[in-house]
Length: 296
Length: 338
Image 1 (tube, rainbow over the protein chains, first blue to last red):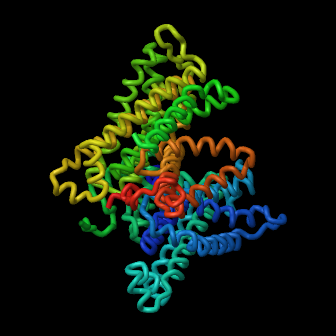
Image 2 (tube, helix red, strand yellow):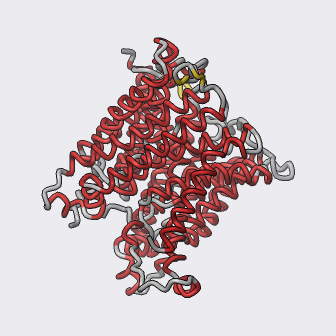
């Protein structure tokens, strides 16, 4: 086995894995704070991608906004969408899993098809802001955009941890996620915290989408497959756990890349799901998840 | 027999006549085709309802299991020339076995986890359809599946096929009713409502969980065989996760945990889709909004709406017969498990 090609595969996997991780974070944070499984996350990712890329690709009044600014615009717009979504999710979070599942899927359906109406069903390719020629380091070829994706994702994940652990709002968010009744008794505005959680989750999804846009193809249906994989990643790491979402995303990405490179490229998607099923059977709480006691 | 009973019988007779005469009163062949598809959806929805609504087992691989039935029938027919009548039981058994495999994780995982595991296994099955080209024809699918014939009488039009589907749906409905009425049904509900208590009462939970998966998969399998022989062409993209979603939505709109809900949902959704075609691009948006409205305001679906209407005082006062306080039983809408 050629070690250089193996490393190249792994780095590619980490790149796609950080994409999954950012989306998985959205699932896990929202689940932790609202007890809601948000199956519209894939569509939110798609919406966020459009929110950023339309500025960069000159689809708004022919403006060609620089890539970093487009990234920030996309993240902010999607975060605002997240705040709006809190209003819709508030009643949903009180329902059974099945209704949540369907309600959020319905929402995703609405978003997907609204974007088909606005932008058309066929997608477009986005040119990378960085040079397209792969960098060669010790014989390993890496796309600069992939490095940017990995770097910015890592930065975002670290800042998220710092925000949650060190700042007042972050602590309030964690408190309200841990027990929203006690948190609200302590004067923490739980609904606002939930809105903030959704805003952060949506913002991260937008970041993932805009960073990956030059590598993947942008179209209104792009969210469904990645949304499912992001959820699988969140489950793999332990739903509700933030380090778990990151670990799950990276493991899922690397697994997918390695199995595509060494086992069978046509069975990639299947192998990743199979491994996830096996992990869940062996350790249902995921890689990082706490042990849950069955409530009688 | 009281007045209500007579009214009921009369309604059933009228319904029966409408069902039997439908191909003759339909506007065109396309309408009959839509209704044939409706019948197939109703069958899958019945299966999903048994697993999810009654036994509380998330079987979100239904689309793929439907595909297993369809591919079994298609391969047997095009490769070995085996006729429709043998393919249906074969598809049922094949899908049932696959359903048991899909259900195995239910020993270890439940709720969200079971949902994603079954979604994942469904995806795996679908990927097998795409990749095992020599067997399944790959992404191109299988074409030229023969339509059935009944003792030399060819069932080769939508109108003729309609009666076949009608018969299968009726049989499927009554079998489901019988299953759920007796021991199996009671065990299913016990497991759904309180897994631990059911276990403590000595119910063999593992057996019934797998049984729920096998039964639901068998319904999907029969529906698959019917679908393959009706359309004479199948391809893997028909059986992907979106088909599961469609069935799930139909069942939820009709009423999860109520067999009649499967019929109402299976009928309402495809027909709604046909009518929403008028508003073109907005139809899917309207469809999504409709799902959200149902989930948020009438989570038990149409069947719950009807129960509510029946239980409402105003209506009872209006009806000639004043019956004693009817007990409102919401237990059928609680389908989460625990």
